Amino acid sequence: MGKLFGTFGIRRIANEVLTPEMATKLALSFGTFVQGEPVVVGRDARKHSEMIYHAVMAGLLSSGCQVVDLGITATPTLQWACRQWNYWGAMVTASHNPPEWNGIKFMEKNGKGLDREHEEPVENIFFQNEFKRASWENIPQESQKKDVREDYIQAIISKVNAEAIREARFRVLLDCANGAPSLITPYLLSQLNCQVVSLNSHPDGFFPGRNPEPVPENLTDLTSLLKNSNFDLGLAQDGDGDRLIVIKKNGEFVPGDLSVSLVAKNLAEGDNPGPIVTTVATTHILKEIAKNTNREFIATAVGDLVVAKVLQEKGGIFGCEENGGMIFPDFVWGRDGARAAAQLLHIMATKGRSLEDLLDELPKYYQVKTKIKVDPEKKEKILEEIDRITAQEQSRTTIDGYKVILGDGSWVLVRPSGTEPLIRVFAESRDREKAQKLVNQYLEIINGV
Ligand code: MG
Image 1 (cartoon, rainbow, N blue to C red):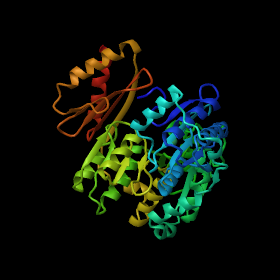
Image 2: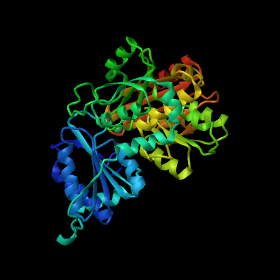
Image 3: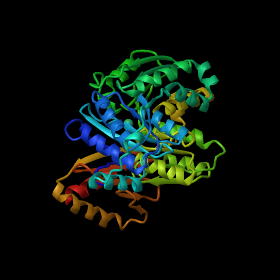
């Protein structure tokens, strides 16, 4: 990984590290790299996104790039627009991070996050100040303002059985995290004839409703409201709308592993023989679905960018992550929360089944997920020990961390965090006790070092 970019773009504290000057320099580096070709730009609803946004536009214009300005929009909407027009992209967003953060995600011309091999030259231009600026008469005079939200919504509707969804008249409680999806998902669901009640659905960079990361502890308003009312399901997004979390009508949180499996199962029933692509940290329900439908199951390193890349290279039917991220290769080369919501309703409507019934039909696996803080000085030694012990196992993969798959299909993954002094231990088994036992076994090893 380079000095600037993280797993997807750069993220820093706004105006402390990510200043307008830095944003301009970054955009100028990107503009230099793309040699003045057109760039679609968008931003999330953060307090300081507009500041960073103007800085990004200035940098792009300075390098001679024509700028198409989408204004406040969700990340997948911008990625969709890039793919439609074959334009590069730059999205000002810090996704689900707390309000003081901001960031920039650059996109390839097909809308996929910028490839690693393209990040490197951008970094080199940035650090060596090797910018190529347009001469004054070649600086584009004005950006083209475009609002693609309605086109994007219509494009999603064209991908699902809208008639069936409209007939079902679903009652949906939707939490937009006061983020960019506030401007998209409620309208999409309304057009699908859902009875939508939206929470936190006005864009507000202070995130007054909740922390924008869609994890159970941040969704208590949504879950308690669901318990005390009569909806078919609850949906929650993150700040830039690429993630979707599903909640049952009784307020019970549906783990990402299960919501993605539900969608994967449905797509795998189709004729396309392509593989299912996910990460090593995601449920093996997907592996079973792939096996049952005679297709390949591909597990990549953790990160939506890697999943999208492999999905494209291998001609996969669906890409997903354990956090509920879903990638539909016929639509956007990245996670798309709004499309995921429509797809889920499509399944419920066309099967005529409730969310609960559909989840019950999935193969039963039990998961235990934990993380343990470790002394940073000991981290290396711990990982050496995990390496030594797991190397003795017959089926081990080291694509990302150390994953051991046992003969009965149970597995355990030990994976260090790249940014914090943390080690994550995930296990999954058909036997609940065995999953816990596997996690305990490796926690003991970690603690014993
Ligand atoms: Mg996000």
